[in-house]
Image 1 (cartoon, rainbow, N blue to C red):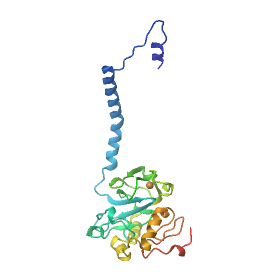
Image 2 (cartoon, helix red, strand yellow):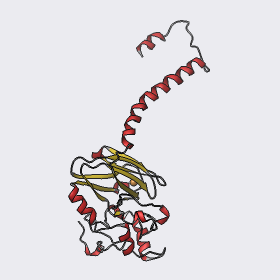
Image 3 (spheres, rainbow, N blue to C red):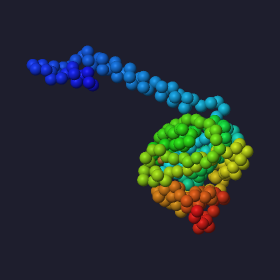
Image 4 (spheres, rainbow, N blue to C red):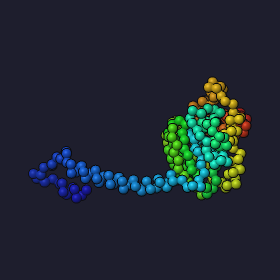
Amino acid sequence: MHTDEMRYRHKEGARAVYQPESKKLEAWLIIVTSVGIAAMLAPGLVVYRGFVRVPKNAYELEVVAQQWQWTFRFSGEDGKLGKSDIKFVDSANPFGLDSKDPVGQDDVLILNNDVRLPLDKPAKVLLRSKDVLHDFYVPQMRSKMGMVPGMMSYFWFTPTKTGKYEVLCAEYCGVGQYNMRGHMIVEGQATFVQWLNSQPTFAQTLATAAKPSQDSVLEKGRLLVEKYACGGCHSQDGSARRGCTVALNSLPMAPACSSMSPT
Ligand SMILES: [Cu+2]
């Protein structure tokens, strides 16, 4: 800058030259900026490749986002997740799983903002949104990924330390975004398996939940819960959150809200 200040300082009789169409200058600008941008992006692409290159021994964890709550799905004994489509979503089937797909019958559903993961096992995190843009973010895992309605995104990580970590939504997804919070509890394999076995499978939720009609009380309740983001404070499985639990899916383990005292 000082060189230019000296070079272009006021000189008696000197006149500025106007060059609006300098092909030579434009060519240099294009080359230099292209090389500069490529040099800045290349290291990021190398890092991103590692972020989405999933190890072969990783298990799948599906995260489903909606305004303003999280739900999770693990594959059952077959190790595969069943098909899903937004057209199947209703109060009896909040994940929108295909009830005709035999692969999905043993999938384990976590109808809760809190999920548990086994220690030292790589997890492939599959991300899906039911409504608007969200972003799955666990700060301690040093990882986050956007969630786009109509497509699946994914990344992987290995939790290496037991503990309770906060799950946040890092995308502004509406007025209740601040309340779109959950927890990721990392624990030993034995405790994790015990917990997983206590969670309902898709087949179990279908057997216990009556198929609602559009104007049924259950369906109206589900729409109200979604509209007012009740999931930010109220669990659906009896687990302790800021508010009491609500039974939206007729699951046997979900006591009525009036029978729980707020925590
Ligand atoms: Cu969100």
